[in-house]
Image (tube, rainbow, N blue to C red; front, side, top):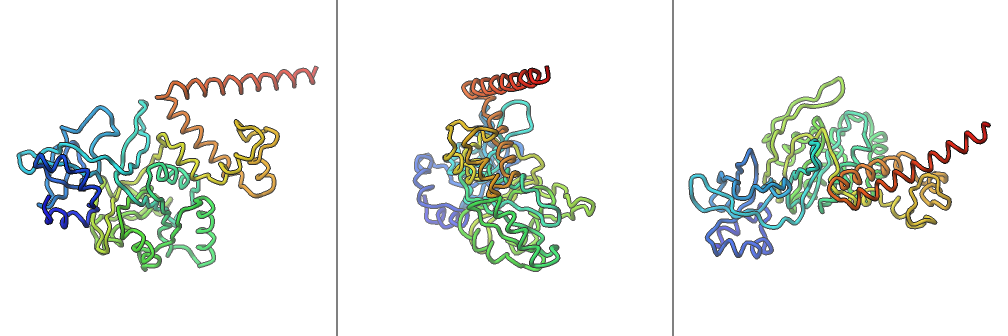
Length: 362
């Protein structure tokens, strides 16, 4: 591998570890490159020769989690019409969500990401449950989440803005929370410093201001921007593909289309990280399998009674745990059996409670 290749790819995250992983493909005369965009079996790859168009037919397996995606480092043919991607290097991190399909499938959104930036608009009421959902997927991916509250210039005063930031900080333990305004530049310097090293993926709903934020970070209007609807603050899909772009201050940014659905995909560890205070309390419960519903000696319920844990947090935790178990159960027979046993137990308890009530009424 030439020094030209190394210097050309360094701004996109190439390092000695990637070079070592590429050694077998270097011996075959293949070129290293990073996928900057994927579109229907074709992808754009940045190489030392510039951006090349390549076909992914050689690496399109039946497993949707093993398809080439934006952020992958790949081995691409040096010539040909069409050129082909021969393989992608083992991923360091991968951001995956469940699809809307009734089949049990995951969808990979971005690979080899260091920071997952969750963009949340302050132009509409905060949806803390949705933020928790995004954070669970971000933690599960292996990336460091960051919550960016966009459109801070629309908040009427500094006190209100401070309260909104505190609400999100409570929802996101261990996660930096930044309030920014792409219009007047407030807070952008902190975000620029944070993303200047490594790869960042920009996530959020349509209308969250992702494209405007991406343009602010890039220093130019690269991404098309459309105004959100005044009636509900929702936007349309401005970005339609995932694009990887080099930032002027260092680092790279992957901008993604707005996500209406954010389904969990085998994200048990991520859910536990988001609700770390509940997981820590659960370790002090009297029973190891405590469901935190009505069991004696439940430390979680005691924290709620003492006003130390919001009821909303526990309800959101239960919801995401159930959803994740359901997704995992689709492909794991052991988990399915455990869920069936749990449903039968709860059903028996419910019937017993009804019989007890009937006995008192007689």
